[in-house]
Image (spheres, rainbow, N blue to C red):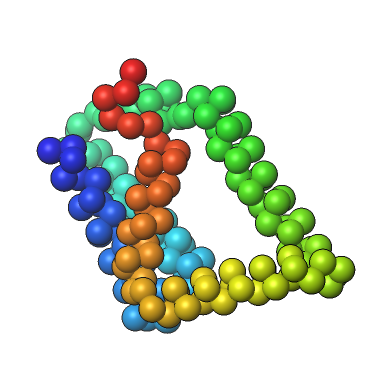
Length: 142
């Protein structure tokens, strides 16, 4: 059952990203705002429904938190990646290193070609798969 849920969630997420960003020609910021609005409204409706039916829902805030080490490692990885990309782009933009400039232009051109050739659903699926494998622990690993 678990093996089916991951790809299904990836497919649904990729479809949502494709529909919102490509079909409607909206930005990613708009996508995140719409997702958070839908989640907030859904939780509000469920809260009102549970209150009306006198159902107490225990909320354990520790269940939804990640450890301090996991948060630190995630943001350290993000900061290192962004810092490295910024320094490479800064050096390439100055024009002192012609080979680096040509490598950056070639990589950006390849990314542009890939973005035009592959659908948004495929890119979103690959991104979700990469994030799941990189940052989420594998099920069954001890």
